[in-house]
Length: 403
Image 1 (tube, one colour):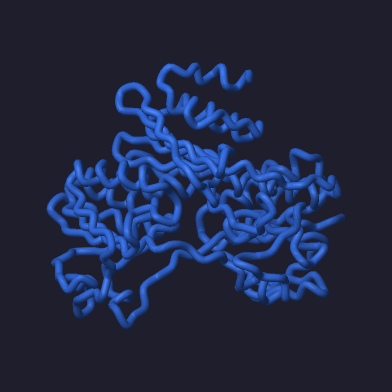
Image 2 (spheres, rainbow, N blue to C red; image 1 turned 180 degrees about the horizontal axis):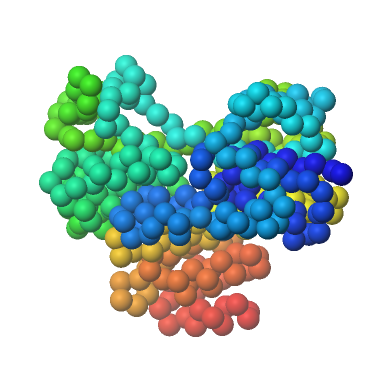
């Protein structure tokens, strides 16, 4: 009987093993997860779960019984610590060795942390990545507390939104010239800066952290502009690092993540990779797409190809972020954009349309689900309405799909 092993019990790993069974694989499947919890959603951790609006059991992607029902061995609280790719052997943290016929790495990523030299290891300095992180920080989000949010990307902004909604006095610092500079146009940065300012968050751009202050527990911060602030806790949201240690142990090719081909296969013909840890091909480049959608889609393609179906992975990027009463939905990737068109919607809704030359490549939609869906379908169909058509408030947007 063939044995397929999947290392990493997150969104990608859960999707991959489920797809193996739905595609008819009848061999042995083992899913290995480093956490004690069965596979769960991560996006709500910095939103609904942290706010107490989503109970823990609703985080789970599937009931734990699903894995037993599908004859999938779920090994939790277990790490794969070494990989002998030549002999197809995994060594686990328990000391056990597993042999496999095909292996998939869905190991995800790790949050970047601050060095101890600037106070990164003080109590009260936290990252938002897993359930344990969220459970650790939840008690800190109490009215009257003072927080420093380090990093003006989506994770930092979502944490700031939770803080403000809980009555926390929040200061957010972003070393770059503007928040979201790496991932969004100035128009989108302006929208979210205004949103957070209206909710009482102090947003400091072009200002970074110099040092966190305190003996054992963080009590303050010195910023790069020379100012000092008193704080009760700090949230670090300065990006993630793909988890490639196991792939490196197996001598797989690494380039900003585990390098995969168009079929999600690594440099070893018996090993696949998917999700945050893996690269994919998009418009002639090898990139990583850090999103739930990519984790699911790439993992399902990997599963099919582990079964010999020879299906190429064609990314269709989409993302979302919830902050206060604003739902941001993003379609496409704005890499290389040259122009941005703003389209106003109803009741404060707005969408930003990214063009590379005359080609529509991405859309940011704020509380504008209708135009998000239209933009997503246009991008996936390779259609590019003229920018002045998008900007015209009288344009029948649905009609653009038929053009």
